[in-house]
Length: 229
Image 1 (cartoon, rainbow, N blue to C red):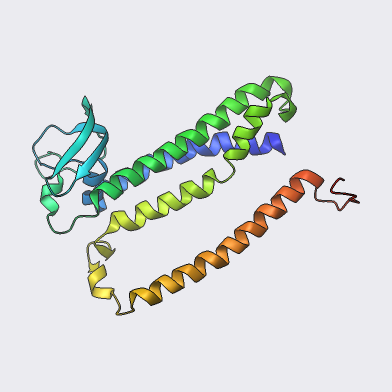
Image 2: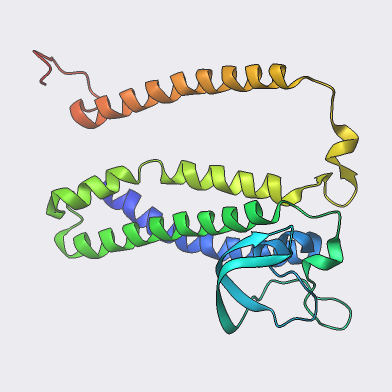
């Protein structure tokens, strides 16, 4: 089971990177404002150097504390009819939240890289030892346990990136959120959100308890005395 899970993780994370690159290329055609926000590229015509880390400031249309990789160009920025990169200034009034979109993409990327790093390092440590997890150090096994919910985190961040990157549209390029917004009060929305969080929190707690029990005692019921199998 450990061998199968490890190999599937290693292969699927490579495929995930390939699919992610393809989705960014698709977004460049259909949601160019999102890609300009991801690259924090404000002014059309300026050299589109790769902004590795920064804090995009929408008020001044600049990047604060920017770490720029000069000469490295983003391959996904949308292009105009002349082949030039399209900046955020071409989408005035119809921009997604730039800083949030920028950081959600990088958080998703960092989580994916962490998952890939742990998976491949684990594979390198056990492939010569017949995939025996007992060959791993206690500290590394704790590292793997700490990554248990990294997939959930990656999915949650990807969902947030998809939703907030689409703003201000509900349906890309056609229907805005303002056109479909209701008149429900803030209190009602917060109460509904609290109820959802409480409900799914209980489900998650039960799932973790079940997972811990299966990991400790196995899926076949065994006799337990004083907390021991």
